[in-house]
Length: 112
Length: 115
Picture 1 (cartoon, rainbow over the protein chains, first blue to last red):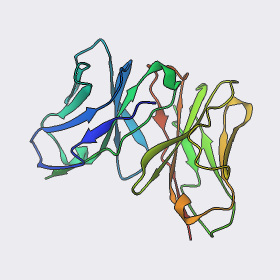
Picture 2: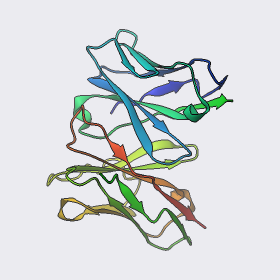
Picture 3: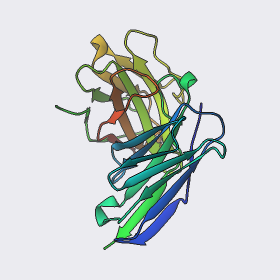
Picture 4: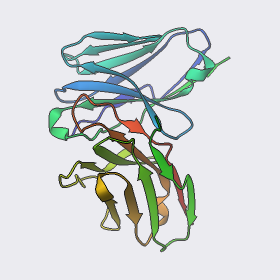
């Protein structure tokens, strides 16, 4: 099964700044998903990017995927204090069935 | 509509006791997943159910862990003879089907503390 590795482990920025988190993986994927987790509880799905897509936007989120480098990045523009959370990527290959394998995540802190 | 719910939200137990954690998936979702999140281990997959198919148990850490899904809906994760290393937040998720493009919706989790 495929596991993503997020980088950096922790990121601290000021409100209004942009936050960039990276995800690397090892083998070919069918898609890659990003999730957010607040306060160590349930995860919330943010965005899914397919292997044939290079960039995807959702509100203030921008996700890129570079399959040649086996990496993805999540950019949050004009960050807010409410964006403070842990962010996880989940690269997915068809033979995993339905399960997602998460990395350790990036802990983002946005200071007002 | 209602999201994934889990109960209890917090559980404190003594080492050696059995515990049961419950998950109510979103109505109509055929796939249900259990994950565990503990300090130093990140977010680990435990088990998932897809319809009437045999569950994928590949993530269960030991035979003390088991899960059932009755009637294709509610699921119970049972941990027998709990150990301190079982302390973690147990997360349940569901999706319409277990496909490669399907979003998983997570519950709020059960925080288990084993004394």
